[in-house]
Length: 118
Image 1 (tube, rainbow, N blue to C red):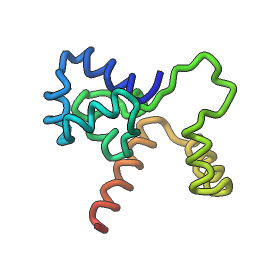
Image 2: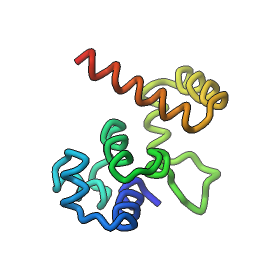
Image 3: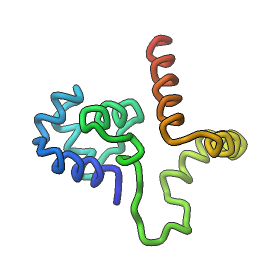
């Protein structure tokens, strides 16, 4: 299941309309619609906003429930190419040492630092 499908699934489970979720997450209605239809991929800060409103871990929105999990998905391949294999390996090796909650907290801290920088 794609990130867009996950957003729609959890939005519907919480009985939110697209308008309600967009307003509460402070994103545009059409932007949310484009995420749910997989026309666009949300940035990490947007995933964090949506997951907060839906009261679920961000990882639930990012999880890709595909039958063939032995292959690396296209998004992961692109990310590895963008940041480089060496940095990717370093991040993944360090991520093994932390719980999912720790990783999400670290992501929030990095997001906050980036916001302060801008």
